[in-house]
Length: 506
Image (cartoon, rainbow, N blue to C red):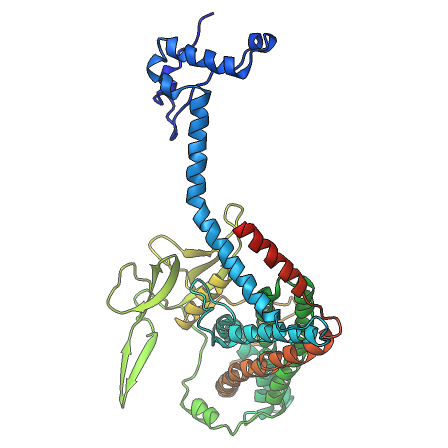
């Protein structure tokens, strides 16, 4: 029987491996039938490699004995490399257990208040962690990878909430139609000589009621973020599953109750604005008297100069400059910056709108697009620029950045009723046009005042009702309900500590 020469493989030339090859002689059927013992098999293997002309030069690196030596050497090196790290980890865990045991060493087994003391200590720590996560007063637990806790809530207040309000941008044509109908219905069969106040109140109140939806959505987002903070802080008591479950249940239940209270308070804020229309407001008079007439927007031509996007005032001199939004990459994240000098791949944002896009089958990312209202190309031959983000939070950050740069979301097109007569909204009466213009300017001015107030008061109401009362609950209500069912893990910790100590040093 002719043998296969495996010298090229054993020399690690044909199929190279990092550790090379070790050849051995397996036991054949003849050896098994003949009951050849291990000593005789090892001796026959050694003689085979020594006497074989192809393997004679590498006989010292072949055989079961050399394979055993090689494997033992590799195992020894692996243990030598991993043992220090393992030892350090065990020592760290030992120190942690020693600190935990030290917390219970002063407790007497027969002390009836020991459960209450242990529970008080853990609940106090949990309350302190929640407060530090929201207030941001802890420098030891600062995350350098992502926003967390209070920083995320701050972004909801000052980026997401204003964006939700801007999404309800008023349709100029529809607004004027509503004002015309209101004026005509108020005058009835009479010919009105003066602008009716009731038309202003009717239109303004309708716009004020639209602020309820983004305000309630802001409350929902803040509550979800608070629930996320509570789950993260509950990890400190993860070694007590029942305690952690009870803490989360009590705090989240209370927080849901406060959520309804916050929504009621915010609804009252809107009701305050609806109850009395302060037409004597100083900002309303200044804004309405100095405001230029607003007309439906006309698509700008390609050569028409665009509006400036930022201005700086110095004394009585107004210095206007043009800012450009430039995408740049910092590390692994993208940001938008305003740049004056560098105009590489420059895209002006005049007349640009933002729309959400559906995810395709191939791409699961969150997508949105930028486009010109007048149908011009955004960049070279592209009518629309599609942008994609890996998560919804990045989308919100980008949309907020575009909003600050003057890029507003796309308006939802209103479906026209088949019974609506388009000629009813058209008026050739110049007096009616002047009245519509007056009320339109007053509504726009008054809504700026109301929106500014809502943007300021909604975060304050949530901070008072949701956040500032939360720590009081953790320290009072949680203890009251859990003291009767409290239990301690002191005996379990001491047992684990003793076992781990024996395993390390013995």
